[in-house]
Amino acid sequence: RKKHRASAAEGAGEPGLSCLNSAQNGESSSAVGTHSNGVLTSTNNGNSVGAGLGSGTCVASTSSGSEVGSMKKKKRLSQSEEDVIRLIGQHLDGLGLNKTVDLLMQESGCRLEHTSATKFRNHVMEGEWDKAENDLNELRALMHSPNAIVVRYTQRMKFLLLQQKYLEYLEDGKVLEALQVLRGELTPLKYNTDRIHVLSGYLMCSHAEDLRAKTEWEGKGTNSRCRLLDKLQTYLPPSVMLPPHRLQTLLRQAVELQRDRCLYHNTKLDSSLDSVTLLLDHVCSRKQFPCYTQQILTEHCNEVWFCKFSNDGTKLATGSKDTTVIIWQVDPESHQLKLLRTLEGHAYGVSYLAWSPDDTYLIACGPDDCSELWLWNVPTGELRTKMSQSHEDSLTSVAWNPDGKRFVTGGQRGQFYQCDLDGNLLDSWEGVRVQCLWCVGDGRTVLASDTHQRIRGYNFEDLTDRNIVQEDHPIMSFTVSKNGRLALLNVATQGVHLWDLQDRVLVRKYQGVTQGFYTIHSCFGGHNEDFIASGSEDHKVYIWHRRSELPIAELTGHTRTVNCVSWNPVIPGLMASASDDGTVRVWGPAPFLDTQENCSNMDS
Image (cartoon, rainbow, N blue to C red; front, side, top):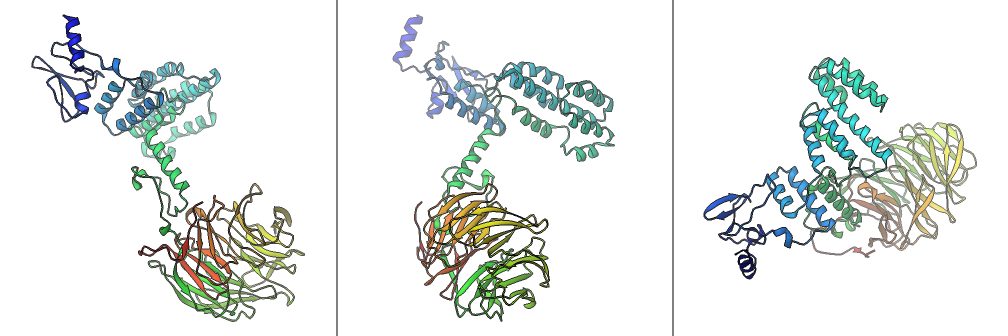
């Protein structure tokens, strides 16, 4: 009889092969049915039998009650497939879909975590600290590491358990029990004695709120115990207990990697997965990037040598050979610029500008033959200081100290001064032929490029100096990133170079730009300063992603050398360029029209 029934089952296409086949294919049969909640049932002679999800079993039967095991016919899962199933199971478990998890584990034959880990987890969440401590012995046998490491890890886990136990006793007002844990269990571990001293101080807390405030601890309950489990898991292999929220972590890493590889990503990074779709790869359009002319400012009547956005991004200052500085106001909504005021009287023209840290003051310098420096009060439009130490000086560059009360200035004739807001000389450094200056965030060190093709650091407090960067060609200008780590150099006949100031190494040479012996100013820009922009003697503006040597955009429109580019520090989609053609171009994202005008792009 058995042989006959088995043959019949084979000839019928094995109807009892899997308890899930009919459910997965959307079919129904008299042998297997599925309810809307996903619980499988089978009927035997009219009697309904539920497949108990909580018990981890799955029932499939033929009309006679004999079973054909589905797992025998199922292919063996690879390690990566098992890992994926466990990750999905953990995520579903976190959503509270426990029955679905049971069914997934039952059908796949996988185990979400080791039974010892499950027992340990339950004891921790229920606050059964003695049992949880005993569970460590079982878990210890599952750690496949050198014995010394296992001992150390077990000791740390025990310390974390006892610490939670101690704090919960204190919160409940059980001071004697807490004291016993401190003296009889924590202290004998001889682990992290500094922390034990801190814990002993919590005995003086007068009430539970005081304890939680001083410990920055959430208090007894699910949240603090979940955090404890997250810490404990780091000492266990993932085969025993998965790291917390592992699937979300992997997805977040994937999203961040795609953003990092996106050459045009220029928006604030949001680590939340809710802000993106996981159904498509991350791609930023070039049309969202500031490579389209939004405005052409034509108020200057001669070559425009410099432009610089204020630190708060609300204003743009432009300096010209026409002896004027123009302050432009940036509209916060439309990002259009309108003329705010004109500062006149710079007889030699204006080749360099520097905003004070709070944007109250603006210093203007002239070209090589200019011995004067102007310090303007921007809100009032009044000249606060007109400084000149000697008619033989050449004050062509300036940089503000971070305190906003001092600045340094110098030029190629060997002047290097530190002054206050009234132009009074505070310190000087003899014999340094300065090409460009930058004040470091420590408030003491000044970086200066000189005529020896190098950048040196000068400390005005202890009067020491040291070499930081050495190039083989003249450094025409340089700027430093906000974090002070990277320097961007425009090097004569070479182009734009990126240096790491901390490691003192050349990181990257950017290609495409035409750089002779004109002074051209480049800049960092975009969110997180991921981009670099520079003018060029071929009348273009070049933009690179910081990690890519080939330009991602070449902006055309100017008709003569582009002397300076400034990226708005607050509005990442706004950039300005100043040119010998007498105009300032304001660049932004594409208008809503489907056009590629003013932007030629190259895939790097």
